[in-house]
Image (cartoon, rainbow, N blue to C red):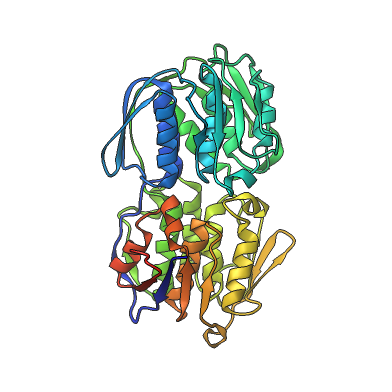
Amino acid sequence: MSALTILPPDRPLRGRVAPPGSKSITNRALLLAALARGTSRITGALKSDDTRHMAGALRAMGVTVEEPDATSFVVTGSGRLRAPNAPVFLGNAGTATRFLTAAAALADGPVVLTGDAHMQKRPIAPLLAALASLGVEASAPTGCPPVTVQGRGGFDGTAVTVDAGLSSQYVSALLMLAACGTRPVRVSLAGDAIGARGYIDLTVAAMRRFGAVVEQEGGASWVVQPGGYRAADLHVEPDASAATYLWAAEMLTGGAIDLGIAAADFTQPDAKAHALIRAFPNLPEEIEGSQMQDAVPTLAALAAFNATPVRFTGIANLRVKECDRVAAMATELSRLAPGLAVEEGDDLVVTPQPLAAFRPARIECYADHRIAMSLALVGLLVPGVTILDPGCVAKTYPDYWRDLAGLGVALQPESGFAI
């Protein structure tokens, strides 16, 4: 397995880094552009494993997706999808898998969506149950991918209720499908539990950009008018989840890193982590992470050097991400300093240790990009932190190591890994 050792810098990190485009917005824009009639241009987009899986799936379903440069997609759609000739492989791209599971109802035949071993452990049954209420026939025998959707060019229902306790992506998938109906569709939550609600706001904003009419009714229901989508141009803002690593690196080293965008200008939920990161080393004793889930690993890495212990709550959903992130962070942080982090139920409790208590360690990332990027931050202060499988960051931030190196962090690759 390839590996990469971080050498603690002997000075504050200073410089300018342009984070990649938002994965969340890029994948929403790709799908909406594919469902629109005409040609759409998406600029500032993320080019990573996840978005390439989405683009490849759309091509397999009859959509023209061109890539004129490193941060742009040009998408030409007809408002319809074609059943692909073979199962569509989506790696461990949860966003693409969930969004396409709903959109596949619009195809003109059966669609099989599958992924790697990690994706085949990620739940999708609540979305399939919701689709059934719209008359969409979809099955996943294990409750996880692979999924088979019997596309028939549309759907029948006008109301759907979804259990979004595991992921807000189920709601987003249904909302984006709903605009392609022939009658208004009401999408409602079953209960109050939901993943990061802010991502639904991202979805609604993107839908409106592509011409859909969506109105929220109360805190748990949306009404989507029929009419489909029209082609549009959209510029993707930088990825807020990626920005959290750079904000944290700045605080850990006492540096100044210019991202070219103010924290207040992000529309993504993880930008809420900025205020917490700026409070370091005085993070609060409890951080409720349900509405900024992808930022929790970053904050947990910071908490290892905080002045006081930190308990992370509301993070049960992290157990069904690319890996069980609660267990992964507890295990790997404690590999660096025994007892540094522990699981208590679904909470993660990080108890800071003096620097002398840390030891060199080879960090297992469980093929999870966020584990790799967050635990690399520990290596900014602790000698001997080696990240195994560093290439997994390609899922959302392919240039992560190159950007750290550009800020002055020395990196020692091994086993043939190239930065």
